[in-house]
Length: 244
Image 1 (spheres, helix red, strand yellow):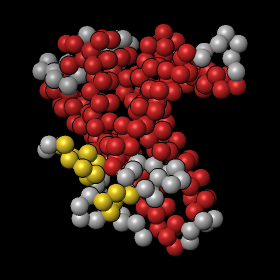
Image 2 (cartoon, one colour):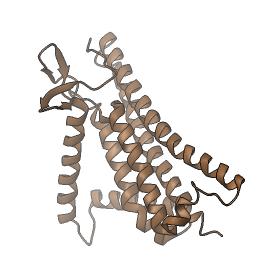
Image 3 (spheres, one colour):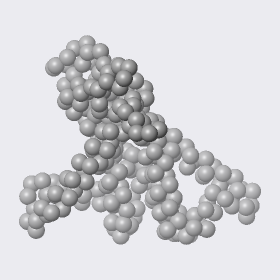
Image 4 (cartoon, rainbow, N blue to C red):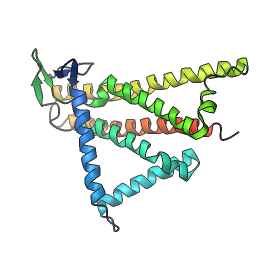
């Protein structure tokens, strides 16, 4: 049976930097999405074909959902690129790890054989980095929307003891978001990979197919949840002071 490792394995080193199998697949997914976006952009037509129609329907659905959450079509259009990018990249990263044959490609790292590809979200470093980016970006967007001082005053406020205590709780909640976002995504994707590895070893061929379908669904849902939680943070940071 394929070795189950909690952390991503190094394929090779460039100086003191180790390239892991999860990072390698993340780079491939990134390049693939950029190539697909470039080709799709050049083939946009006034009268859309089936693929373009499906993409436009999905984008319209997401825009409507964002408008309902943000309360403004203008704000939905402004933050759509960020939310859509998060959703598409995480979804493709999740699905890339369960493609047929991905786990069968192995390399020798000097001591033993390891899989060349590993789902990026099955590496805690990847999910933690994405969570940190999400929290930092949403706070920057909040500063841009309401101003630096009004936004910072949510976390650091000495006007009275109650507001100071609430500010501390708000600050702690931002760090809690990082932990929650990173471990939720990592836990679901890593558990799915372990399940598929064990099932494929015990009963190969037909039996793993239903589990692969389940993992496709989980990969989609986890990408959607991550994107929606980021959107909720944007909504809170950009509208809190506008309501007063």
